[in-house]
Image (cartoon, rainbow, N blue to C red):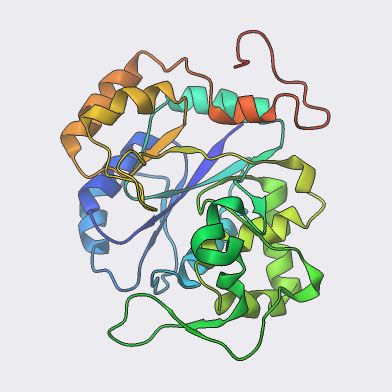
Length: 302
């Protein structure tokens, strides 16, 4: 099973170029926020190596639909490749497992996708987001000089078509079938796209809601593809430092985010060289919970 990688970036061209090199020879598509000026720097660092595509650019404000548009550009590109899975990353991600190990994991997925998703009300979002419903009920717009989108309450908004909303991580691993379903639905149902354009942090809801209400719902594994360091508390993951590397490698996750120190990436490279035998987190979540699952064995089960 061959992956293709979609990378969303806006700064740190050094880390972005290093990530691309770590992913070779697999195809990579890069979306650079239209507000950013790093593309010439990235192109200079990558040189003329094959397998890299720069996607049409969108403005990506925090909490608004530009991030979904960037991901949709990536899926559109992915469907033009011969690859089996699309994996979404940021420019500050880095692999914790050799790509050959990730390829074997993809084969074991047997066409299933990894997409963290939970039906609203999502327990982790109860305290600040009414289980996620606060993100949907108002119109959210970007105002000058204001970072966070502003809610404008005109009436209680609901996902069109009677779809139940779902939420989860912005980053995923989607099968070719799921990617095709997303793009068909985007073309077929512009009202759904219009609705999510005015929600808060739609990249944590759009793909989850669309796919969890689709015929692929039973092919979705509710897991993350990343290791995240939340040891400092709060809602955002910490920058990964040396002290977190042992836990990151032991997690079995394919990738970690977010990094900002090339020296730490040097140490990740050394740790990864001998392989990373820790089973991926999705395996323990899949075993016994997915109808027809038959890929677990004594070597890989957790």
